[in-house]
Image (cartoon, rainbow over all chains, first blue to last red; front, top):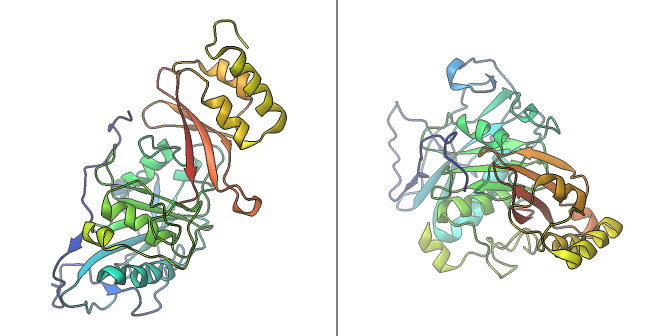
Length: 238
Length: 97
């Protein structure tokens, strides 16, 4: 059993039952990812966050946009963090997740985002690649170092990496898993529904996969990407 | 294979087959015959050098033997994990996502 020595404090994913349109000025603004073509600019402007940054310096301030919300529905906020070498468009993935999770009347919002200039992927060989866990209960030192950087408040951080050591398209960390995190990792090799899939693991707090290849939560080994069904039972869990 | 390594002839045969074919199916068969607690040098002798060695946060290690490669029809990765004391803990298969 993996220890929690390196684990940051547990933070449950944010799912709001009644979305608000009148967000206070002190809160990060948000938007449905389908509302605009926001793209996380890789490694844009410089901003040093010092002690918050365990393995590098931060190079962009959160990008914030206006915030109309779906009234009466549930919502979850995603904060994309682009690591060096990642070329994936976070907004596209989050927009796709938003469209898929609309089956459950769940709005998936992108809240800000940043590029993180870090050497966290150089801690282990091969360098420049995220050394990934073989099992969620056994995160690597690169992963725990990466997850220790979570500037996203209550939003779920989504770390975009160029590639993963075992060739995975993505992975997740659930709030009740050991050690406990709520986070998503997406590689450049991800499928269009990988972020939505990993978000499902986090929101349902369940590492298991659905046997139906047409289901969003089917394993990437069998899933028919683009069908992405979600059952009422699954919707009830989020 | 060192004397005393559990699994016996069946393990040696499966490991030899894996070494010869590098087929994931043969790795599965061999890995499931390795006894918990088997030391890293013995596992290396059985399975050969891993593709990637990753240090785990709990002090253990993960040795990657099969990388996922959808282009080649390989839809999951395969690793063996050692605990902090260096003993074989388990065999893991991880899907693409």
